Amino acid sequence: MYEDIARTNLTSTRWRFATNQAILNRLSDAPTGRFTAAYQLPEYIFLHAVTVRDYQIEYNVYGNKVFCDADVSDELIADYTYRQKRSIGLHIFLFVLNTQWQLYSLLL
Image (cartoon, rainbow, N blue to C red; front, side, top):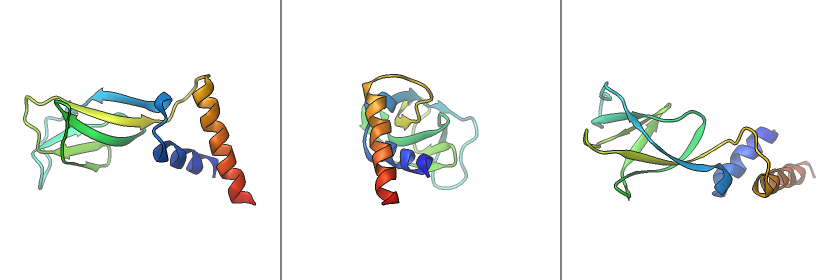
């Protein structure tokens, strides 16, 4: 139950300690269907946006891949939230406290 609430808490607020960007790697196999390109996503993320040259593009997520209509020369940047494994800091403390309060409110 805690894990479900923690995931919901991560996606409902942009916690800066758990937000990052990554360049996506284009896959050699083109997807079947509507899109011309497929890109690999990092593991265990909650995707917020995919951009090319700071402009958001249209995409769909299938499993652990992003499908879109990007050109071969485009560099795709993913904005995402991830689950922090181990870290100490005020932001982490506030996140855990917030998650515990949400869990407590469900038990009342």
